[in-house]
Amino acid sequence: MAVKMRLQRHGSKKRPFYFIVVADARAPRDGKFIQKVGTYNPLTVPATIQLDRQKALEWLNKGAQPTDTVRRILSFKGVLYLKHLLRGVKLGLFDETAAMTKFQTWHSEHEANITRRSDEHRKTQRAKKAYVPVVKKVETKQAASEGSAEEAAEA
Figure 1 (cartoon, rainbow, N blue to C red):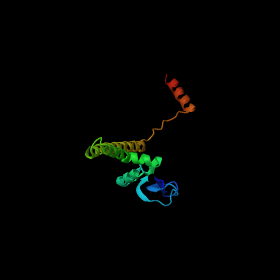
Figure 2: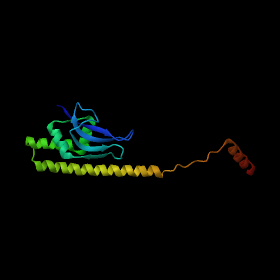
Figure 3: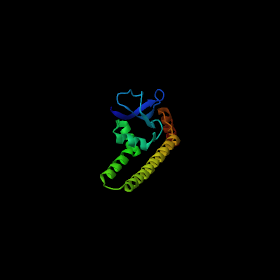
């Protein structure tokens, strides 16, 4: 039985909301699933992702194959990096405390980067809202000719 980690669509028309689920590959997209691992809301800025890291890691170790989008989400949340580090522990390259230290440093840098990007996005959105274009007064040919006649009379 092939098991996949994939998105299950919910929400109304043009307002998607997804559950990240583990399901049999033969089951329909929104049909029967084995376990719910998290949620993904692409409509918020930045997109909201809630994920149970332990459940996702367990299913990956059991052999569940993520779809392309779920693979990107797992990579973004650090699940694939954690799996990579734990494989290094299993091979004896370093101990588990070193792996968890590496993961914690990566995670803190990643979170700081996300908050920095979010703040920059908010600033640009505020700047766009505050921008009011200056409307230039356009001279017509008649007004321009009257102005030149007045200048000639003064001279």
